[in-house]
Image (cartoon, rainbow, N blue to C red; front, side):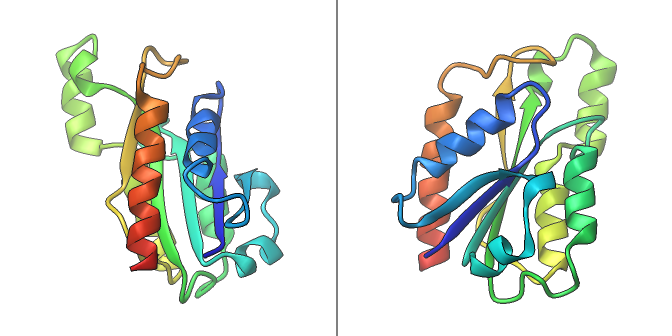
Amino acid sequence: MKTLIVYDSYFGNTEQIARAIAAAFDPGECLGVIRVDEVVPEQLAAADLLIAGSPTRAFRPSDGTRAFLKNLPAGALAGRSVAAFDTRLDAEQAPSALLKFLVKLFGYAAKPIAGGLAKKGGRVVAEPEGFLVDGSEGPLREGELERAENWARSVRAAAAG
């Protein structure tokens, strides 16, 4: 199964997660770990599984990720398995009750990414996943890289099965 991992990143945290996800695949299976603004149609066409990720910015995916999803042609992901992830602050660690409430109301980036991939024909094979950062710029919380690799193994199994 050929897998492509696309991501956007501001402070490097989401890129680190994308690379940890790639580590769960055999080298011959992974087509690459590519920023959303550098993906070309041939890469998408070669992928059986597309995993897309973004930092959560104002309760949604980054502008680059939203543009990537918007610019995918209708049906571009037909017949492909897809999964989505994000990096995010832990709502339970939010400094204010208002922020906690807003997170519960508006959510994080992974769910809209998964929805966008599905709208373009992809078959979502795993629940959208979030990986935690400490502070708005990170670093990643301890253990998140390992958790990302484990999540990717479950995505791989679901896509294959």
